[in-house]
Image 1: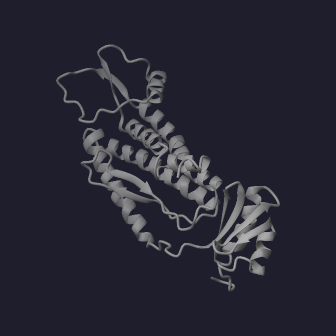
Image 2: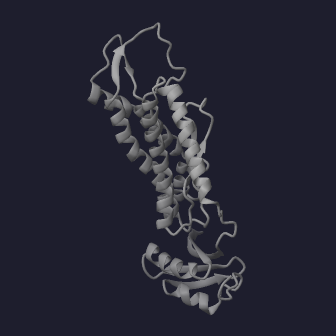
Image 3: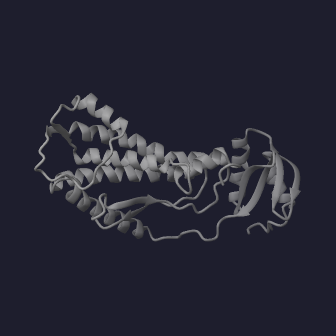
Amino acid sequence: MKEGFDLKGIDDPKLLEIVSKAFRVESADTDSATLFVKPRFSDETSFNIVLDELTKIGLYPLYREENGRLTLRITGKKGNRRELNPVLHLVLLLATIFTVTVAGYIWWAGGDFEKSVYFTIGLMGILGSHELGHALVARRNKVDATLPFFLPVPPFFAFGTLGAVIFMNSPIPNRKSLFDIGIAGPLTGFVLSLPVLILGIARSTYIPFNPTVEASPFLLGTPLLFNAISRMILGPELPGQILQTHPIAIAGWAGLFVTSLNLLPMGQLDGGHVIRSVFPKNFK
């Protein structure tokens, strides 16, 4: 610890002076390095004042409501910060671009390289925006987060990637931050999925159904939004016709699927983080 602070010595005058700028300290639990406080300003303003001061000296506050009381727990920053070579980000990005392009060429573009490139741009843009949404909101909330790590897989997997992940190198300080960070990814991914989907459907066409043509081994369900946009742009599907879906539309479909999957309120999915931030006692 810097400045000689000891987390066991939560009643250190220097530490209390910092906290008192934004909180009234009612009592302290020295064993758990916890202060019981009341904010002098709004919760967010008070917390940010203390956060700015404590991070300068290598400490980190966690603001919670526990048993009906507001607590400020002082911790050290995580010591196992992931210091990874930026080259790794680039290598994974290039590898994922390659596997996604090959997967698009095999599964969705019918052997048309240009269409597979469009598929890659759409899908990588959606996945990247999802994780960047998490990372940017995390940093806005003063949570140390890495850049996205893309996850390539062999192109016999239909999309050529398992998506991307980011890592948090410091604690998420409060429920509001947890909610904001959790919801940011699905929102940004959804916002980008819509124009990709619209562009892809606009490039799609209805063709006569031909039972002699081998169908794709992948049967994609069509969300209501997909069907609604198709009807608005292309009109209703007539008897004896099927929609020949452009690879860009497949990328938009994948974006909607990833967003829906991540919003499930379970585990380490984004929806799990959001539901825990809203109902911390019911979902742990």
